[in-house]
Amino acid sequence: MTQDEIVVRLKKLLTERLRIPSDRAQALAPDALLLKDGLGLDSLDCVELLLGIEDEFEVAFDDEEEDWMPHFSTLEVLSQLVLSVKGERT
Image 1: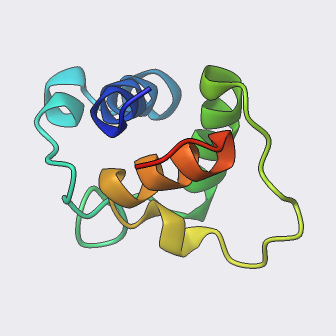
Image 2: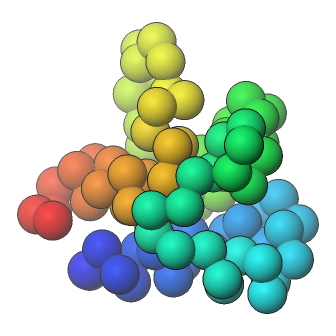
Image 3: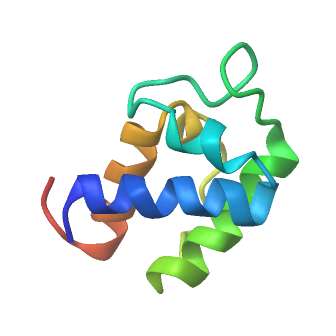
């Protein structure tokens, strides 16, 4: 699975799990900000998206991680996290 394929699936999750309008999600560049001044995701949105990612990509994230928020800065960073957890190269 490529990073681009993951970004496409992440955009779909934004629409399905967070009810972001499809056209808005599809227009997001991989380096567009997702938090605060960008798309405006908050910590609850990130938890919901994380659960969706676990289901969509059949991965499990380490519950010991203290701060997941930096992983949600952009779709690019988030897709790299998915690749890392899946054990694939970027």
